[in-house]
Image (cartoon, rainbow, N blue to C red; front, side):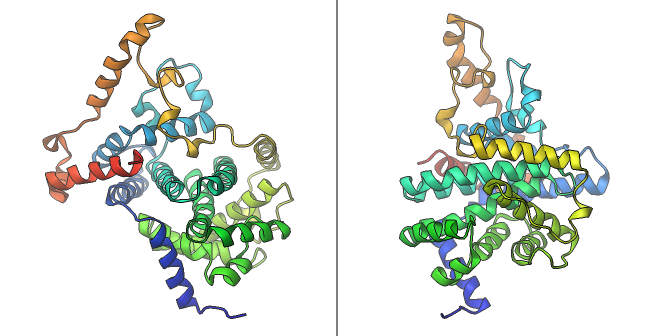
Length: 369
């Protein structure tokens, strides 16, 4: 069997990724801005959820799109249900306030990645595979929530990127992807590097690493992801990479319902047996019943005054119906920002035409045109 060189594996991965999607400046710029915001908060000892003017600018423009707002709302119902339970109205700003800038960067990246792949994959094949993606991403998120050493943002992102990177093979070679899924199941695996190399001469790891780089998550994080996905469980690994390795290994094991293998250095990351039991219990529920809301799959038709009244200011009864249009117009207007209202730093970085183009790009990509 011919095995491609490392250089060829990267080249082939890049070709498949480029044939599947492109990375819009509107999203990569927003993600870089949010990550810079998070780093600034850490360096200055700020409130971890403090948003810069630049971050607010991008978030308010992005969350005007119902196709981005819908996943965020259902994500919040999944992980912050208690904070929404007693509220009759939930604003966009409130939803955003539940997350750190780095978490919002991970969330936006997954929304973009998932829905762009959904649009170009065979609907029937995507329907089967996306069920796995939604379930395992939810498991990755709960691992990160319960193990602060791992972190919600990184656990959600690493798990999501890994399994969505594999969907690039579904997009570019659906017939062989079906064979791949069959053979992986025989091995009792969700993903198999060996089979991927045999069929495509590259793996989801190279694709996922390039996705992280192109989104703007930085070379160090992308390199940690690469090491985490390829390093055997009993081999020594640096702490940052080991956090990701534990997330990737555990999320797959918990999804499959098998005991997670021992990972070298895991004792530094697992806080207590009680937290571990909670993770196992919640993962068991996901495995049996599926993702609570399948938040990542939500599209603009998932939210409306009838389906998600929390997102709409209105009265009760007939008055609510009468006020819906006026309310929606008012809320959209609140998120329209004129060029001269932009943060000065943003005005220095982009022209008015460039900002208009960025927002048009968001609409075209996310609103499924």
